[in-house]
Length: 279
Image 1: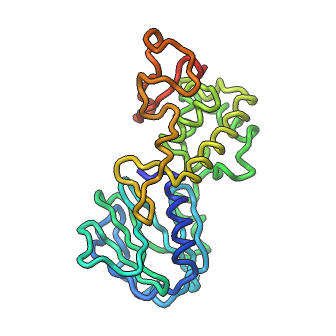
Image 2: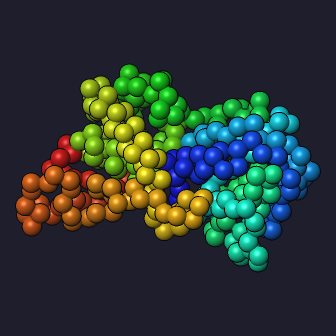
Image 3: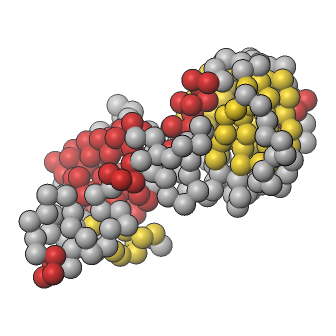
């Protein structure tokens, strides 16, 4: 599933190449996504100009001149293609094609777990799931005091707490593992046992990990590609994710004795960590 850095990469590409264009046409080839595409979406959105682009957690929000906003979620396998001309014929998984005055935005989703809809801009914060989301990782409110106070209420493993979008939004499975490695914290420790100084290290590690991933265009695992069709390369910079049995960066351990990076399951998700460096 595209995580926050991948969604941020897509949002930035849309802003860079499509900009404040006019929406001229919307072709819905398959509206049966995780949420049905509204039947009046073409009528409501065509003719409006794009005023700006935002990201909230793993959602792309495109604000329009008619007081509506597009809400776009990539689901498990969704990707966006930006091009001058629509492909002919379209790919069988090209479900929504948006023609703008600056080019085409094409939503391709093999598994159809994402969605493309709209709502009134002024009401977005009151809609589910936005009404119950925690702060963004780069918000000033996401600091050691805030994280420590939230963790004090959680007996679950700290990895699971980081994935709780009510605590902090946009941190997915890959980046939670990587941030905990950078902070030197075992993903198995109960969140309530993480000290405030450790929370400060973790906040910094989360931001550093996510920023490096954004700069690298995200991680290309399975389906994800950038809107120009190229791959992100942060997967080449992973320290622990999907590296079971390998050495972690600057490792001085005897892997034959330690077994290297470990894999475990936390909250139903694969988690990777170095038991020597993460305590």
